[in-house]
Length: 400
Image 1 (cartoon, rainbow, N blue to C red):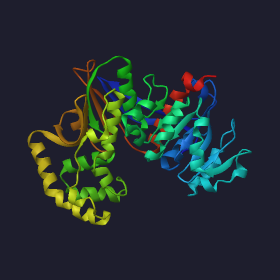
Image 2: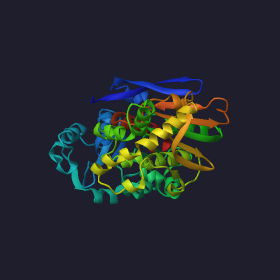
Image 3: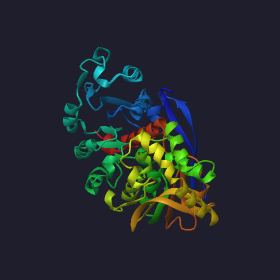
Image 4: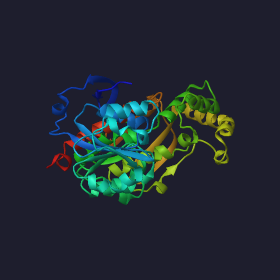
């Protein structure tokens, strides 16, 4: 992994197709603040210091941001106002497997304290004004703190989908129409600009009729494998799990709930008000496998080989391929297997890339298609940092 680097995504836009074709890296330097149009350094607080959180810290190191506090589930570190934590020392601790509770405060700015995370969370409101709170956790427990932070005058950035997919009222409280309170690109497509694309359409006054796409690299990998016909469904799932492409329990991916959360976030971005329990979700395993141990599930999943092969063959006979698709419109949200034409954007997609296809008044003849990597610690962190930079330019954060 590289330190002191800033991602510069290179995109190609042609006939409504935006593909993130790669990333180059430019050394952090004194021009960074000017290039990002940040008038002054901005203070941030980070919740969650796992793989994505660490990648965020690496990208923030040397940038015009001051990391005031970092919290894990048990302990947090808080530096005095105006002086940020020594990120080099924090990253050394984290790379060695240590936790924030073991941080050597003697190597930090004078006055730095390690305290229970719950105490820091209780005091977050007092830190909010002109500052950014970053959520790289995977819990709903941060939701009230994110809502309160915005209420107190700060802005929030989220890689965590759960605060955005709770009650509609929470989403509304965090996400202002002006776009100056919440950045959440990484909650849907890591660094691929799905949310930015939708927000620009809304800002331009376009009327979006539907959004559909594939938003899981894991399920994209499985669909491509199924399409090739070389392996059965059970073997594919086991291979993906063994390679680390799935969650520790592959049912977390196969249930479709993660894709459903992303669909809900996109729908709410467009102003369509839905709740999670209103989404129609198709699981890719049978209900009798829900309570098995992971080991037993990996054995049992092969029972679906025949059923999945039959669905693939039926689609093939019609010139179609199977994809795990999220479909969103004002009429409702649906997540599940869908047969699409082989020569359609989704049909041509192969491997773990994610893709969003938007039909709107402006994109009526040819849809807007955005494609790119939808996962990866560094890519996700890049989306988080980009959101921080965008919010840092707003009057809400840069103001006196």
